Length: 105
Image (cartoon, rainbow, N blue to C red; front, side):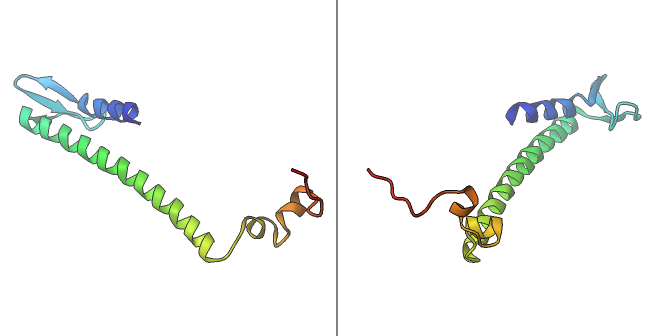
């Protein structure tokens, strides 16, 4: 994940083209450049990196919460694998297992 994020950050940093003692920022490749100072460019790049890191970890946290919430939702409803997959048929009936036979150990 960090490899793709570093490419995103580098891509954003490349939008700033050196121009004299400052930079030209281009929103897109064909957009007209906006002049910014070195300090502004550094602040923009740092803010972009911070927000990409925050949003990435936020999405990861949200996915984990949704997965955990789904497990608890299934657990609290009393649903089991057999009930949630095939309207009450047992798991053994679905896979064709003989539940009356005992295996010797």
